[in-house]
Image (cartoon, rainbow, N blue to C red):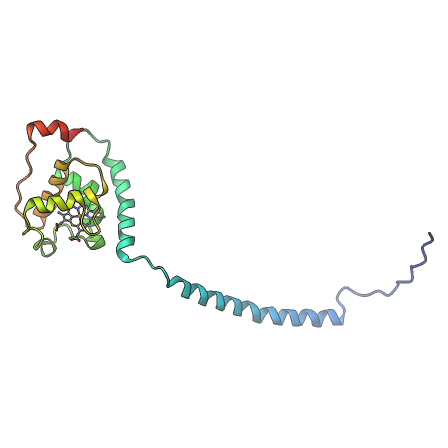
Length: 178
Ligand code: HEC
């Protein structure tokens, strides 16, 4: 086992003339290729984006739901007293009605509330309790019916309504608090 193959003395520099021009070709190739890939992927992502765009109302509802959670953490544990209409509005309703999001009649906007407050109070309350259009039942919360009613009165009257503040029925009071 004698080693005879030591004849390889030709010293090739790592970057000979051939290697340089090869690198040059590669450089030119990639400097063209990279922008092309970029442009193609940009175009593809731009067209892909167009497919399932959630509607503006969907986004606003999602946003309102998120805002609502923050609101209920702040006020939820405040007390076991029934909330006033204003408190109910702040906690449950303002996320949408504060700005008119999701197509809701905006707080204090008499033009938006005008046609609605022509309905009997029962009908408005029913919409708030059971939900209507983009509005989830109870505005998505778990308040008592009486608190919702107060919220409806608070909002409807701010929009030009003249509904009386709902009374607390002595017997229903305890039930409503639970
Ligand atoms: C997720 C958003 C959202 C929240 C939260 C919300 N509403 Fe609404 N509300 C709406 C939308 C949207 C409408 C319009 C519904 C329609 O006419 O299709 C509406 C309509 C109403 C109406 C009019 C109903 C009618 O019959 O014309 C009342 C009253 C009302 N809301 C009360 C409330 C009260 C009270 C709360 C809080 C307890 C509340 N809303 C919370 C979105 C919301």
